[in-house]
Length: 573
Image 1 (tube, rainbow, N blue to C red):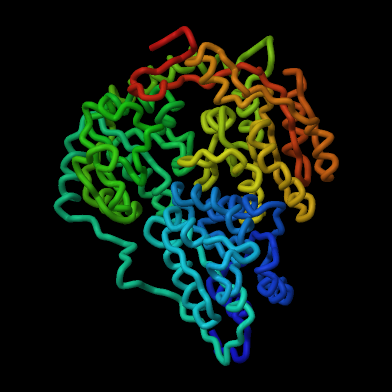
Image 2: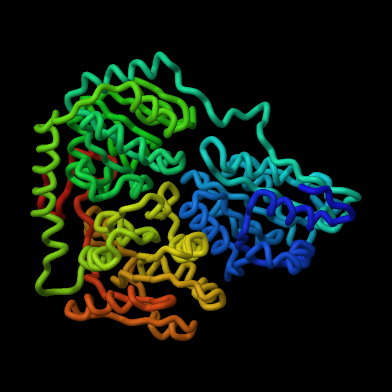
């Protein structure tokens, strides 16, 4: 950039954001950050600021923006409660590998440690849940701090970074300022290279495998390796499954795709995991929701683990081959070196067909072809998916609706499924959908949310109103905290302890925010209401009254092997 003269620390920060091509900031002003917001007043033609209704909304919106676009999300908050309100979203971004730069204001450097008004030690609080954090106490530190922040957030395994800036640093004047983007740090290696010997072992295992399976995690999306993953699977005649976070990396209509693995995964994906002789785990971390009882996980398989984070290798599941590095680069190398297996492994794929037929009989047919009784979550999601044709970005909150949305949605394009995975944050969905739509205005964005999760961040309807954001909101309304209720039904003898909800009239509430809305109670109203929502220009809230005690099946009980699938509370396989 051209050197600038006689500018404040606040302006140096905004110029730094522009140099990093940050075009959108989600935030909420307050006392300690007023100098930065005052400077932002003159930059609104270059930086769009989205005023959320709560700082948690700002950080989740930045997450949605980052996950939809692949760029680094940016959010801002004032000191004290403003900063601490970001913590849930920062922790969520850390475990789900979402690149964020979070900027917080702080009291003046001279007041640090005095318990001044709205002082909180946000650096100590966020140290365990950020890739890096830093407190700038003078204006001259700001440029370098921001450059390091963006570099660390987006490289290697992405994640959140927090920069805390004291009030005096915002107002101090710099005689001159020139921004220098960070291109490397001596103590940080974001692009490790796979060991050639380990790569050769992986090729050997894939070339001789009889029942290979690829499990696609979010790391494939983060690396941009979707095409390489699909091509490798096709070359090796290898079925592809997905983690929850990996959904949409592979088109759901691809003939080799066998569904989602894990606690509420598809039968074929879980059964093939247990039968596979080689598993290529690409950009995933083997969470407990994927593996179930680790001692009984994939008992017949040699594990080839691809991940850029060395900490993840053999942390939960022992890898037979560890390929440390960028998923796209490693998949490209495997694609180059592996033998072609055209027309082979018909019996292996027949197992997927048999498992799908069983799942259809016990789960899918029941969910999608109801003739009487209350509307099901599954048929609602399926109805929306048919209208959107796999082209929309699907965002979810956390709970039963999340599992139904992941099961029955369809995806033609990558970065089309956004949810809170590792932390499981209720309240994530609505602001994340806002961020996704801001980042990808040309794409349809639909949010599936429960009546419980929506009320955690429902104030963000105000953000939709003020900014005119075209988000479609589908409430799968069962009047319960559904997932907790399901566990209470199945494992706690139906003792529904504090999971029943008394809900407001969501349609009336939406109308107060100028948002078109409709409530559906009868099945014969559903199709027309979905059509109306999808065709509507602007935000739309569809409140669907679904079966109050519907459960998500199949299910693996906590701590059990993924072979122990439950298809209902009575029928076990």
